[in-house]
Length: 394
Image (cartoon, rainbow, N blue to C red; front, side, top):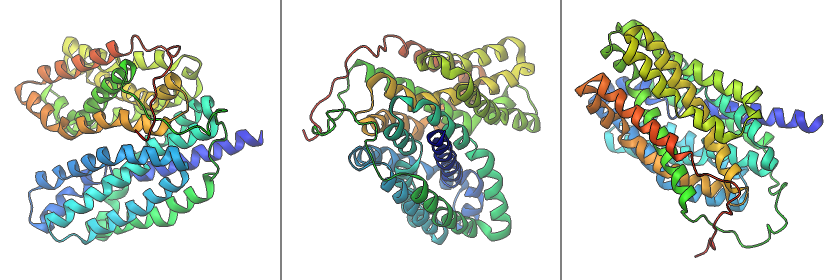
């Protein structure tokens, strides 16, 4: 009972940290971009587009962060992420030109590589081994509220403190809430569920067929997720909804994502993770098909399908590498699998915007086709196949 209580407290703490980290990084520029642009004399599209620097920096830093976590455990990298987030947010708040802002956002990307889902998932795998699926789902469930909390909280801070004050306030949240939470909750001891040969030299991942399949699956998933976060209201408007109705319908994405993670936490965990992943890849195409057949009346089905699929895939991102390859090198493996997805995120909104300019049906066809590619990638993944490893120092 005490162990279960400890697991629940850790899950709640890590989930709350993820919610605040996403709110103050991934969802920051969507609220503050216009105010920054007006104050700095820049085009809003340029300022928001600078978020690509954060995504690129995160992709570059992720493998090194994964090696660090595997070698030293996740507590120190998680604490380092809070310090990095605070420094980056303070630098954003002090920015007087585009060069400083770009550098600050790049530093924010390093914080994202150190502190977003990959690190808490690795901590849970480190502590609970093959039993980590449920706490990973719990962290993803709470962390999924990042947009629901972040957008209104950042807007409120901007209204009262200005965009610079909002950045400073979020920096304070990392130093005064997230950092002490990580320092207090996360055990410093690693390898509690270590394999008997954990004293052997650390070994990295080889890009075998299963790794490539997972990388393609997650790259397509995060490409679509980023495109939908940037364009879903515009897509729904192009399909015939009023701007107000499009915005309210798009909000169903978050509700569906949190709901399906709750279902995974309580019911779906009884099913193999590959089964849930395969079902998740079909959610968006089914919603798109409903819209193409029934028109604007079926728009909620598209939003719910996108949210449900993305919510399940976020959990799969943490669980599948563990399920297929085991605990050894989990953080580094996960980081390598994340890199193609992070790169796909950078150009996703621009590419999907061009597709949407052609027609909303063409855009939906593109995203649905990618989902079918993801569906195909779920076949042939067999845990019985022994993972291929090489000496990490090579």
